[in-house]
Image 1 (cartoon, helix red, strand yellow):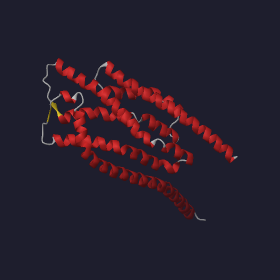
Image 2: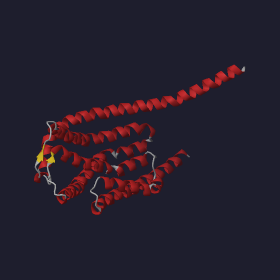
Image 3: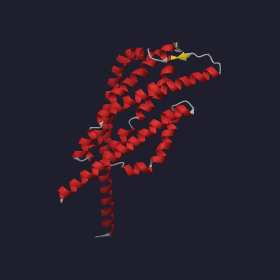
Image 4: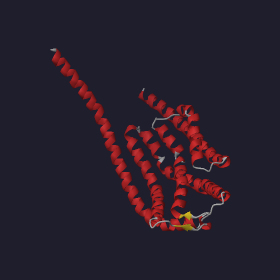
Length: 266
């Protein structure tokens, strides 16, 4: 065989290897694109539902403190539409969340064993439950703290308060949505443990960094006083410890299942 033929064969083999490595990547990207399109379609349909339900949701929110003690104003012709769309989007997000969790499960399903597929599917309904729990905590605990603190500062500065409806709801949802999503942390960590991306040992090594990140988030979404910060940071750290505990349970079950599988194979 000549040197030219040898070089040509080597180049062909490298080309085949590159193509074989590229195809699975392209297939994964195509699958991810398909799942993302499904999520966008459901989100748009949920947004229509959100627009329909926005008015009763608005009436409920306005009947609760602190909104029922305020006189809210509009500063442009678009404020009413903007407020409706903010409420509609939050409703659409709540409705779509379980579907997003299911699509995530469907995306990783081919890489899972049969028992892993069954165990991870059980997490999907809890996505909505955890989000609603975070929504209740942020609305009834964190939001009043942040709102009353800002009013106190305005009072100390002798400022006349004029509240815009868009600004009010933007302020409220800017607190509610991030904290509600953070309440998905235990579920997310359990899922990542179940598909063997995370494990309790790695989470324990990441504990200090995770505490720091959660503390920063807690400070950003609360008023700049120690009591308010602690009222948010402590539950967030508790969520991480709960995530670690649940991850440990999932990991031990995996080890038992793997041991049984190896015994059956032998």
